[in-house]
Length: 308
Figure 1 (cartoon, helix red, strand yellow):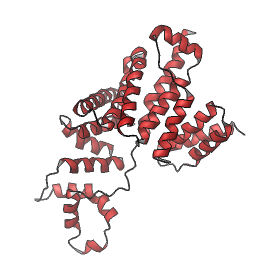
Figure 2 (cartoon, rainbow, N blue to C red):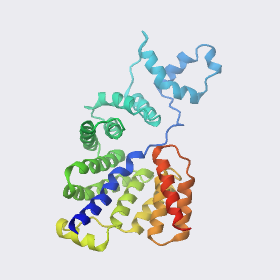
Figure 3 (cartoon, rainbow, N blue to C red):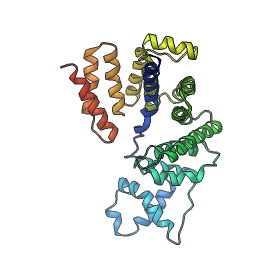
Figure 4 (spheres, rainbow, N blue to C red):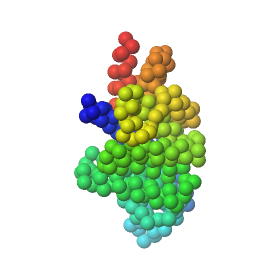
């Protein structure tokens, strides 16, 4: 019985760590028009190409053109803001390895903006299919250290708090159940701080909603057993989870297929069939752009069958 309890408990709490693997910011259509972009534009549009290239095209060529110019006699040094723009562009294009190589050069930076981005991309590299297990573990711990350093550099950086929480959850996968559960309190605290600093960040709201959903699912007898060992394990309710999922949707509508799915699952848990159907159908109809979107689609379809 004890083994079964811990298997279920670990499985429920470990889902939190896998939650954010597919989360990406939506910047693919953003036009980067920095000093470096203007320099590139002046080179690219100096001839007949001007007629063919519009601003969105130039934004997509920014990184490639910059690399091209690196190999010419004219090399422009990038300033801090320009490096960050290049980093965000690579992230929006899912160029994970290139982004890691760019940012790892700034691992000793005193700038929180570099460090939380480095934490994020280190984590992203760790979950790539071809990353072997030993390297994965190394990257998980490196990501946590970068996130920790980012927080130390700027306590008021909401992204530093968010990625510290996420990376701390990842580290818990290697530290054992007791540490993992203990970390859950710290994770929530930093997610709440991230939301306080930036109330319009949908991903922080979603992750905190998932945190609440995860601990809402624990049956009373499992809570009682856990309380004997951990004194006061994390607790929450479906109602609390719902409020965070709804807030995430309000600040950034339709930003993430998993948020739509979790709204449906939360309403299912609360026995509200009409609203569960509403959100599960939205999750099912979400345009699949990533592997996670396809997984969400499949789960939504399976859950909708229960209402047939």
